[in-house]
Image 1: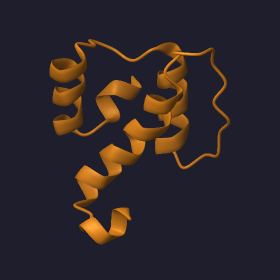
Image 2: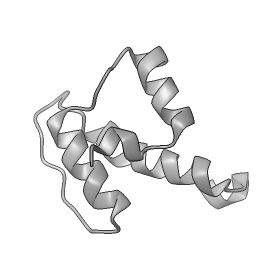
Image 3: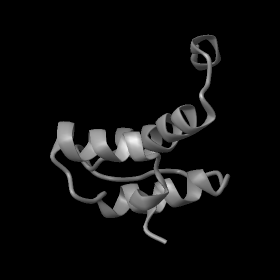
Image 4: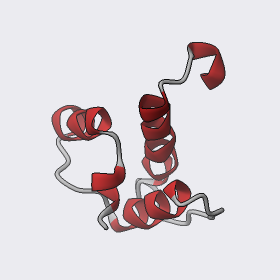
Length: 74
C-alpha cells in the first residue's frame, strides 16, 4: 500500500495543495510506512531530502485521525 494513501485525507489535501506534492519522496514513503506500522526507524537522507516531513507526516496524520486534544500534542 502506498504510504501517501495511509495518511489522513485532510493531511493529503494539505500536502497536495499547500506543498504542491503529488506523492512522497522515497525516504518519506519508507519512513511513513514504518512509523504508521509502529516500527522504530532511523531516517537517513541528504540535506533537503525530506527527513522532517518523513517523521512528522505520520504524527500529524495520527493526530488528525485520533482527534487528539491540544494538550496531547504538547
